[in-house]
Amino acid sequence: MLYEMKLHPGPFGRIRDGAQVIESRLNDEKRQVIKKGDHLVFALRPDYIEKVEVEVVELIHAPTFSELFAGRPSVEFGDQKPENMYEYYSKEDEAKYGVVGIKFKVV
Image: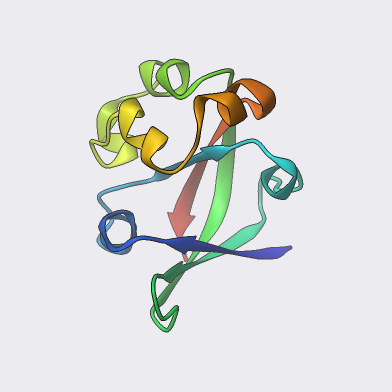
């Protein structure tokens, strides 16, 4: 399957340049359908013209962003910090859905 996700310039640039290989998200209904081998198209906000296609190579589930990040080298996340994720997601949604790290390779 092919799915599209929107990204802010920082993460988009790190993915495009190969400096980030895991995208962390809530494990909500939209992410629960993603499987290993699926393709994602990351679209750069705000105009969504520039895009990067990747293939999912691993899904890493955790209850919290802190636990997800603690289990992997920070370089895989583009040296982001788990607390940065709360700019996008609430702790209530994190508790409700859990989180997923989507490890990928650019195709």
